[in-house]
Amino acid sequence: MYEFGWKDDQYDQLCMGTVAGHLIECSAQCTGGLFTDWQSEKWDNIGYPVVEVSSDGSFTLSKPPGTDGIVNFGSVAEQLVYEIQDPGAYHVPDVACDFTSVKIEEIGENVVRVYGGKGQPPTDTYKVCCTVPDNFASIVLMIVVGHDAAAKARRTHETILGRVQRILKRMGGPDFLETRFEAIGASHFDPNGDEKTATEVVAKVGLRHQDKRPIMLYKREAIAAGVSMAQGTTSFGGPGVDGKVSEVLRVFSLVVPKSSLQCEVVVDGKRFPVAVPTAGGFSASASSRLTSLPAAPPVGELERVPLLRLCWARSGDKGNMANVGLIARRPEYLPILRHLVTPERVKAYFAKRVQGKVKRFEMPGIGGLNFLMHEALGGGGMATLHSDPLAKTFGQVLLLMQVEVPKAWGLGSSASKL
Image (tube, rainbow, N blue to C red):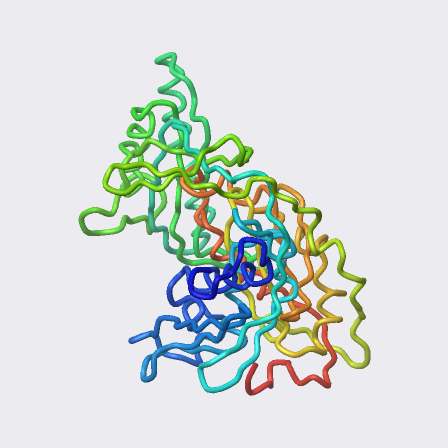
């Protein structure tokens, strides 16, 4: 704003400035970090992003010459959909951004131009993030190997938990507030998989209690698993492996009126009031104004392929919500994606992990679909006992989904490349 003299009501420019910050805030995630097409690059000396902004708000995104990583449409589009809710109303204090209109264009090797974002007046509230103490929690890890590895791991946990619960009952103490068992390696994340075929798993047990001592009791009882329960049970060797019992800080969010707060700049201990606009003016999400976009079933001879063949994807968290953004690799894939990958199908696909509703948003500027999944992270962030507290795996799991597409597209098992 200072360099170009942008005013606080030049919302399109403020939107594009926000887009630039959104793309580069997570270091190399737009220059090849976390990229779906990981085989196409190296990470040894990955280049960090360089943004050059024009006075109209459009900008180029690149990386230093001679560095590893990659900058292309897919790598940057993936980061655009990272950790967002409604892309038609991405709220920051100065502007309500419309990401649905953002376009990304490759203009050279490892250089893209980003443009087209639109802005609206912001809301009259600030977002506030608060933390409150929420009891104690810890994680216990065991390795179980052999036939029926997942079933043996589950019985091991149930046996230890039963022992501890009986002890607590005799002592008149309260039960655990929450326990969570996960057999990592037994298709825990993959809805297509079958845990019965797993021959090696990491048994991950999450425990929450109002007191540290019952959690420590479970950890002590778990030592017996290596000598008196399932054969093939072992622990992670080395110091510092077993997690400590920690006090949990749960995050919750709210909004407060901008007019209720006074903004100040503090320099050398002196406070200087700063006048900022508080009236707001945001009307409605740009998503509500999108016209109906075409959806079409596949026709002709069909074959089943994973979504990976049709899309790039990236996922992230928003509190207790997870989002997955899908970006079509080719424009002709998008109508079929709209037909096949519906909110209802995504909800059913993630049935073990998502307890709330799933909503789909369009992002026509990049040919994308953003899925927002509510109650997906067991409380999210620091409070959850889930193995994926920040929803990092959801995108890769969705790309495993099998869909039927025209065989003429050549995306089946014989395809030489994506």
